[in-house]
Length: 481
Ligand code: SAH
Ligand code: SF4
Ligand code: F3S
Image 1 (cartoon, rainbow, N blue to C red):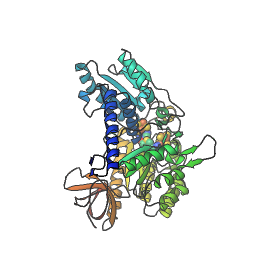
Image 2 (image 1 turned 180 degrees about the vertical axis):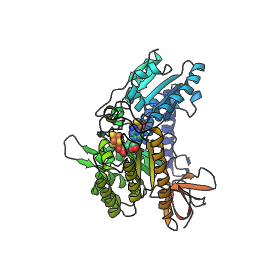
Image 3 (image 1 turned 30 degrees about the horizontal axis):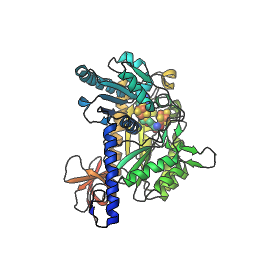
Image 4 (image 1 turned 90 degrees about the vertical axis):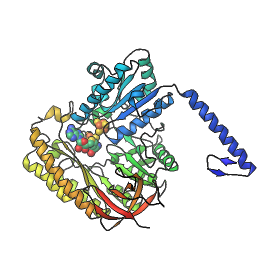
């Protein structure tokens, strides 16, 4: 008898019975999902950081439980959600432009429900409904469990808002529906919110207080992913090094190093990444844990923001230039081959030319593998908006940004060139964007590696690739057996 679950022909009667049973269960499952479908479709689009993308998977799960099916085409949707980011002004502008496009669809389809989720929803709250008339529902990042009520209320002809922030919500029990997934790499949220008060940053206001998710639920989610064929997880938090969980009896405590140990132990074939590390909190214990486990990637995202101590103080980052350099030398000492990336802001309030030069010299000191670089954008309600004047002219911010970008391009290229002639362990994620004749995947350092397709390998497997050439951002090579 053919077993659709194993793809094999099985003859033994005892197995027959089992197969029959499983087939019946499959039928029941189909009937159940069919009756659960409400015939309505959800389209969801995400902006901002990985945490927002991960939250959209929680939202998709809650909406699927309500009977919605997801669609990749907003024109055929009954509900359109946009999961928004407030980090810089242009992030918000993008959302407003996109809402115009949804507005055009709504004119033709009067029943269409448009919802704004995430950080911009939290920042603007009910004001959003006044500013953007086409919006029906506004939902903050801690209120997704309330979606059934909120959608019900909109179905009854009302507008609906829930932007309550929580001290406990981690959505630990919700099984995310993976969206746009390659089936190989996944994000797993380990904590929410942020208790730091970097003066430029809107996140503490849009995401609320920091809270850590139960490690058992994290490990279970990671194990399920591995069993489904995923081979890489990225543990997400605004400041993963301050992960801290204690059980109710206070007999078990887990910090970030402990969590890394637990996740790495799920399977040696599972790669573990994490983001973001805060320079003030990253400990030697975490570095030794990374060094100890082959499957924890040698890659740390350690945003510096500025290389000058006075600016760092104004930013309220709570470390100075020397502290940051010491943490980088600890990384180099404990994990010699580790890749480091960063975030940089140019033109923060009162930043002088000399102070900007210190950011450039910090980049020379660290030799970052990769960087995300931004011009300072004042955000309403933040400490910097209240205390300081956004006094660096846009053209100066831009020129400084261009200098930072140019330097980073040299460093990224230089760091990639160090890999030439070396064999890289690559997790194949799929075909390269440019050609079906090539595979693409990342090495331990998070660098993209492209190489010709090989019959013995498929996506989801590891391959050893000799790096022969590189562009500014990609290594090119071939599989070596
Ligand atoms: N939690 C992370 C950062 C999250 S926001 C950390 O502490 O490093 C991602 C990046 O956006 C920040 O690192 C910073 O470089 C940038 N950013 C945040 N607020 C900004 C602002 N107001 N203007 C410009 N860039 C900003
Ligand atoms: Fe924002 Fe600072 Fe928190 Fe990062 S650590 S999210 S920059 S407040
Ligand atoms: Fe943006 Fe919110 Fe993330 S402001 S960067 S989506 S936490």
